[in-house]
Amino acid sequence: MSSAPHGPAATAADPHKPSNFLRQIIENDLAQGTYAERHWGGSPGDAAHHAQGPLDPAPVRLRFPPEPNGYLHVGHAKSICLNFGLARDYGGVCHLRFDDTNPEKEDTEYVDSIIDSVRWLGFSWDADGTAHLYQASDYFDFMYRAAEYLVQAGHAYVDEQSADEMRANRGDFGKPGTDSPFRTRTPDENLARLREMRDGKLADGAAVLRAKIDMASPNINMRDPAIYRIRRATHHNTGDRWCIYPMYTYAHPIEDALEQITHSVCTLEFEDQRPFYDWLLERLAEGGLLQAPPPRQYEFARLNLTYVITSKRKLAQLVNEGRVSGWDDPRMPTIVGLRRRGYTAEAIQLFAERIGVTKSDSWIDYSTLEGSLRDTLDATAERAMAVLDPVKLVITNWDALHGAGTLDDCSAPVNPHDPAQGKRALRFGKELWIERTDYEDVPPKGFFRLYPPQTAADGTAKPGNRVRLKYGHVVQCTGAVRDADGRLTEVHAELVPDTKSGTPGADAIKVKGVITWVGVHEAVPAEVRLYERLFSDPQPDAGGKDFLSSLNPDSLRTVQAYLEPSLAQATPDQRFQFERHGYFVADRRDHQATRPVFNRTTSLKDSWGK
Image (cartoon, rainbow, N blue to C red; front, side, top):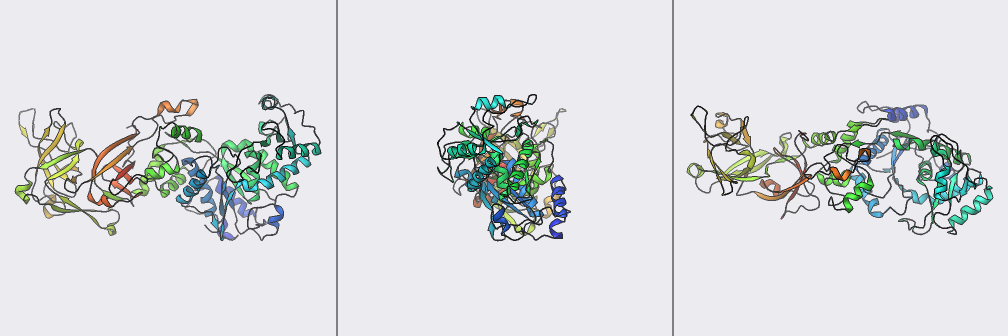
């Protein structure tokens, strides 16, 4: 992604993109030149740093600021597509920033996974030769300097009440808060005490630094919020250098300002925090620490997707209790899970575009995500035939017609939407694998596949049904063999001569049923994992429900299947449409040429609950 200069090209709306309130805000700011006079120092920094740089070459700056305390999920994917997409569409830059202010929960494993996921989704934080990859912990020095300024200016104080006392004195929606007895300390007293916090002279929890705003504010978030706490914990980036850490609500606006973010886009739960966001940046700009105009925060509705949970704590519980195989289990809504399931970055971007951006919460049906996937895979996925519940079909007159041991060459398109991809080779013989469900002793109404000769109600004989074996020949069922337990072991049929697909006689006989097959002589044995939705309840954790009680016991079924020979060359992450069955992917972790493993990504059409 590269930055575009200021000008008409940067302000013009893309007529192919649906408008939304965020686009309207950005377009208005560009038209008004709200940020046109800002300078950029080449890297994040305070007001003095940026003042030394040229005018910012990026007309807009956005950011995606994940906390590296878990794996990203589909809700984060929406935010990634939104922030990086807006920056791209308006010729700007989107930063990737790790909001790593909570050392006890963060790890480099999550940092690496987030970087990989954003890249996989097709986005970059590089612009004008600079990698805009940042971490909040690199700003700890400035955050502390800003805290000392707030104390000296009378905007913050050290509070030594207990947590219970602060909670009780905070009030509620119907009652104003009560001033802390420490609120009247002088700036010098507060500064001395803050430095004792910084120097490790106070115990964990013994004191917090609070902003001094208004304990009677109707917005409880403005009732002297805590901005620093004592926490002796090793940080994955800064080690043991600090024993005090900034609160998220304090750190986040400062991070945005240091990075010259123009539009700070977050989800609706942060709407009540916006007054503090603005208050803090105004105070620091007054003191000359930060450049004006400051960033502005805008909120949009988070993604609520049916049959999915996105709580990191609950997802971690599924992993830790062994209810899934890991963070990348294909049933998980994590980006690594979706990727292993066979989802494409294009499908997730299309999904994010289709659901749009609003300021009101709503539920998006999971079928919308699956539909986006089908629409991207239909045109690109190679086709193949697979038999997932195999039973042998024996063509009893094959030897008489073609000779014992002979095979007939057949072909099928690699992708019917793209003839340039060519054909795949199949060989038709005496014994084939077909789906067990393609045969019935007594056919139900509307069943057009294989069944043996029947006797009608009037006593007349009805011949066995004819079907076309796709890309091959027409056969007529003559009977079946079952074992002592009644289990179907073989289906018998006779070849109808001169009916091979693609030959002049192929259309001479009309049949209603077409079934898929794989030759016994060339079948590729494989493990196929049939995934369904992890939860049977469309809102598994809504209203305080026990989400574990709605785990779908049939969310994974593993079968031993037979695949056509073209799939012997499949590589991990390669996607296919198994004709009749849906879209499948060679598992990126377990698939090997000597032991193929395929995951079902989605069916060919939405059939959930039908």
